[in-house]
Image (cartoon, rainbow, N blue to C red; front, side, top):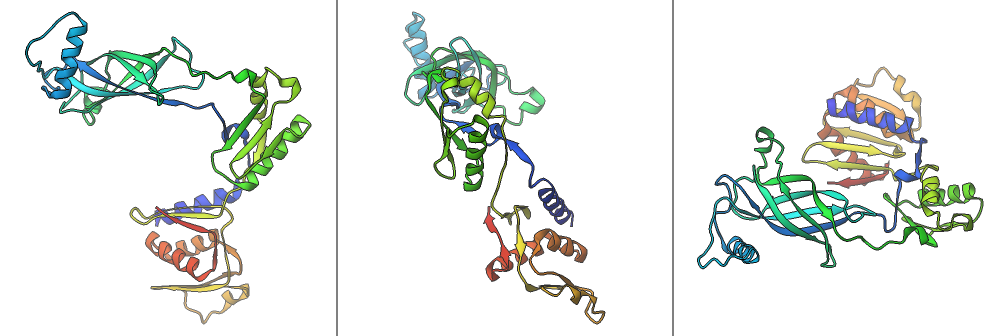
Length: 337
């Protein structure tokens, strides 16, 4: 019952804020302005007997490390105070040499906990195989009480230093490409229109449901940052498909868009609802209480309200929505998770 009430509130809010404008900044990303994943292999030392306890990868890594330090161990090196780990980070857009970034450290061996450990110097590489950052430092696993749930993954805040920059002469660009987070032809066309109106010329062109190409106006040459700062604050009324997302495993339904229903009669267990053109049918006192009439081409909002009045469960609503879609009476898309 609570789930259905929640659905009704979501639908009500959808209708209320359907025409609210959004900033272009929240709708698009600029080509080339993105994070880049970094990855590296390293060793965590200083563990209190919770490490890997040996293994070929750890042993070879320790031998190589000792050799770089001028030592030449003759026997196999084995210790439960050492763990082999994968180190990951994200190189931010326009990351500069010397800038600090956070790193995540995850065990790949038999270590039971990384608590109290220190990551040795670990190079972090990008997808091109080049080293972009170097990381090291003491691990944090969120405190022993909470961190005990995932003791084999830790974080090193500001644990890596950027050593190489991604070459991107952003201020010299002659054109830009904007990409919609949620592809939609109507929204793309509206963004094109508002940019051209505000800049006073034909500078933007929507290529498809995702892409808007932008030519840098002459008065913004080498001032691309100022141009983007201006454009990203333009407001656009977005559009979206009428869609219902259903997760039958959890009984969760999320509905949005202008979802409507055509004339149809529904009977599901003890529930009977008829949607028809004659709204006056509801005045017939001979009809049983479980029969409810709503107008033709009503909204799903009204249907959910009616089902709430009958005490329907989320499972009832899921079955009814599937049947309405198959019958062709539900105008909207259903997506199953």
